[in-house]
Image 1 (cartoon, helix red, strand yellow):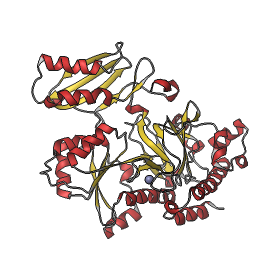
Image 2 (cartoon, rainbow, N blue to C red):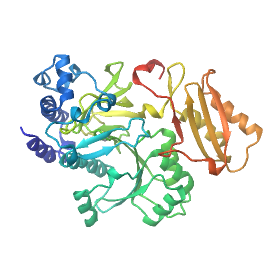
Image 3 (cartoon, helix red, strand yellow):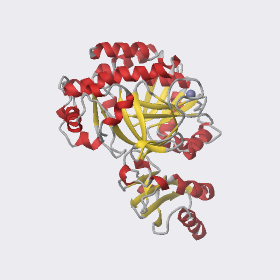
Length: 443
Ligand SMILES: [Zn+2]
């Protein structure tokens, strides 16, 4: 089957797949996988070399069960090679659609797709929006980094916008928070979509009385980890439900929160997602790292590709009746975590939550930075200068969560010295995390 015929077949099935059986979804995955593998071996130098070195022929990979034969690939494998080695030899890079990560995720990288591939996988996104309850005439405010790669010509998107269907209004997430709130109150969107940290920050400023007139039907949060704490902050501020969305530039949609069960549906007809703990499949309820295979990427294939995200595996089929496999939780990027001297990973919210519950009254803004593996800094820009007792209490609360070999400091700063770099984050680590160094037992 040609790539075009496969793509037409995929397009014809996207809307039907949620009503199919699990077996039918698996058959769909197997068919797409065989096509992707054959194409990658024939036209992509990197995968041909990888398969040859491992002694695998494309015909050895008949079903998703056979995937484990293929060695895992990381972003590093792509970044350290010339583009032509990881791009199909049939593709002219001048004619591809380019999706670049901002770099704030810790893995700056450009993904190439043909324009047709890009449109095709975008239909998975529209399907997710429909499942959340977005109606065709709803206005969505998308608070995000507005980069050049997002401003390219998107004909179907422009047509939709002109017809008033699935209209999306980008608001730059690096604007001052008052400007973001001003834009939202002018737009009065039906849906607000954005990064959890930015939305949580905005939610805290809007407040429960919502005098700003911002009154969406619900919120969609994606692009970084949506921790229970951030979810609570957003829901309290906006007074509306939050739906989590898990995506990645390499695949577009990875998983989305089921409105009924609260688990995440894996977008099984877009990718094959494996959850691995120390190289073996994680059991239901166990955490592991995500290794995924894109089922529609022919220009730049991603086969058993390590995404660097941590998730908890959920049941094989969602309790709502849809045939997709599930994730119980998406813990998110390793880069969102602090790796402590004993190898243990800790989400910074473990430090932030107790402090916020007890001392947030005098905080205007804060930033928690892991400067070194054993050094954490909390920068606070206060409404009023704290008392000695308040500072001692903040330090005590932080140290109650940290091992004794980690130094914790507080810095009080004025508004002018508060300049978060890049994407706004409450917490960031300057320490690089690698999955092979994780102590899973203690995570
Ligand atoms: Zn479900």
